[in-house]
Length: 517
Image (cartoon, rainbow, N blue to C red):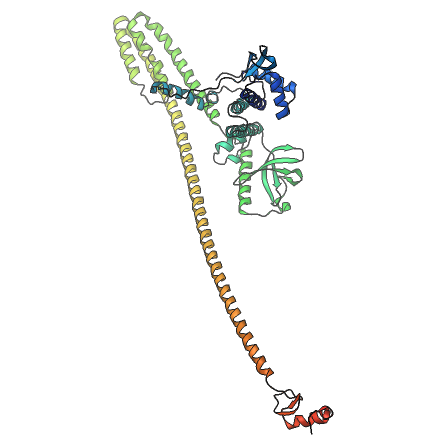
């Protein structure tokens, strides 16, 4: 994809309104001229006529609206040319076309190549603004194609918002951005460049907690806490204390999570003291390039040592092809392949010996054999050196693979453990809910039964009380001691015994007695 240099100028929302205006005017069998469009936009959307004219001209420049000269065929403007606006052709043939598999594969390969984010993989972005501009262009095209109120436009807005947020985080601290996404072991403990300020931060409802300062704005501080989740929060500056403050002055509650956070803080401080920073893949690639440069330098040295020998053997043409063989041999060694290097020096000795038997004397032959032996020793030393480098690299790869395997297994175990705990918790909650429902049902039944028994008992007691009252009313009672009477005196006076009659008679009854004597 070529670098973007020109973009659309019209407002996307205004384009949607203009399309609707032109479509409505055309449906009324009228020419969509500038007067009708401005009246519609001012009446429906409250847009000023000048702004409508400007947006209409920009839409024509962008190719989103077609401008033509149309002759009126009715009304007062019949036969008069006037500017009319049309929607660009959007008719799509729905007729099924047969496409062979080869062509279809070619078309789909274009789609897949775009889905691979080729510009990112090839490193064509030169600034964050270019990447942000491509995301904004994607949002713009989505709104134009699907409409501002469509579901696709909402998804594109969310994507653009997330892209802007991630770019802000990347510009805030690239080390934190990389480590928080790569998530190596102890990723939060590695120091950044430059180092973050370490503080004690206190959220509302919690105690002081160790944290890194990400940024400061007015009276607020953006911090990221040490611990299991590494959460972010904006904290007022009055709730921030320097990391050097004594813990006893903070009055913190030393829970298990707080202790783990302090352990992570101590590991981070130890990495700071040791100057231990995270080593990315780019640095490893730089070391590999340095090693390859060392191997190429050794190859050049071997070529330099072999050039005089080629000059000495210029008398015989059959010796020259054999003297160019050490170059591919050293290249094979530099690529960390264990290939024996001794047979070729032996072969060179034999060739040089045969050549000297034909064309030179014995002292020159001794000199050639000694020089070839020295070259073989040099190549053997180079082979040992690069074999050692390869073995070290292989050991490092094994250790990295082992650490990665352990990390994956540990994460899988933690995930499995959390899932088991979640299932156990759900089973317990379900059992408790069932028991609670059963208890509520039993309690309701007992309450209803007790209520029925209580009502029956009340009715029974009321009946008994009524009967007792009736029996009591049918009896006569002693006027003096209120016991059941046996002796009748007068119309409302009776006595239980002669003693009570005499006491009451002498006291008052002799003056009021109505019994005829």
